[in-house]
Image (cartoon, rainbow, N blue to C red; front, side, top):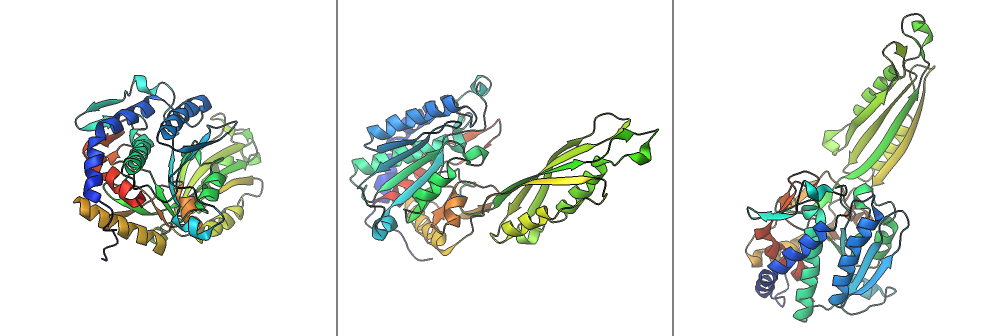
Amino acid sequence: MPNNSDPAIPMRALLAGARQKQQALLKLTQQLVTAESPSDEKAGVDGCVGLVAAHARGLGGRVKLHRQRAFGDVLEARFGAKSSAKSSEASAGRVLLLGHLDTVWPLGTLKTMPCRLSDGRLWGPGTLDMKAGVAMALTALEMLTEADLLGKEIVLLLNSDEEIGSPVSRPITEKLAAECGAVYVLEPAQGLACKTARKGTGNWRIDVKGVAAHAGVDFEKGANALVELARAVETVSGWTDLKRGLTVSVGVAGGGTKLNVIPAEAWAEVDVRIARKADGPRMERKFAGLKAVDKRCSLTVTGGINRPPMERGRGTVRLYQRARAMAAELGFTLEEASTGGASDGNFTAALGIPTLDGLGAVGEGAHARHESVVVEHLALRTALLAGLLAK
């Protein structure tokens, strides 16, 4: 593999700086975690955004808040030399640091899942996904500012709705990514690896209307919506193609009213994952063509592809090779991985912007009660992030 690191970037010095700042990094992460910010609680998300905005201003960042009504505000902070978005040369040199501040955890979770340091880990809701990653980014920017290694313009974008599909932040993300030459995503690492590919996601809902009837007296007059739904579930499940990285999973379903009533209504919700961009339109056509077998029943199908896949393109590979070479200078091997989960990096990669994901914290338990960050990896990963951003 070619050596893609820049010999002018002092990786060992960056590591020493990251170790000196580790306690401050942990303190900042704890502050962000204790500022609970579930996606559907605007006040909570805005409170966490306010903490980061104040910290970014303290580092010399030029902060802009994209105000939202139903969701938390989206935070944009720019560091380093100002550059014109109209210049292609400036765009090629500009970097987007991409993350989010919303979590899946409801308000009050800290009472039963407190933020604490023990057994070499930082525990708590949102530690791994992804408030430690945000703290790492701010620490890396602070290090580069102090060492006068902050040259090209760096845009830090922290969204407020990533965990629920990025309904308001997606256009902001895509607009800013189009003005940049590379995107680094602060999502957690995959084990110890960064992520060079992610599956795209789609969500559909199937609603079935049948005909109600007494199950004993008028059985033949009924049209069973649950039976029709079962046919539809079997059909869509058969679209799974593991060789293509395509999965169709019916996650929840329901229907009927009473044991002795032929059910007149039934429904199911379907999760779809795609590894290839071309499979998105194909799956949308297949769902649109779903029809009832029993003509007395009717099907209504809603939904579609939410995030396109992040495919392993040449630009992303170049970013990975550079990161791998820098990691080697720091004394560890940085592997690459693909994952079935999606992030906002899916949007930027689909635009053709080289995107390297999984540059945040190392840990386990994202979205689970044992969510935690491994402290010993924080300085190494922060130094790597700083190296990627350095001039």
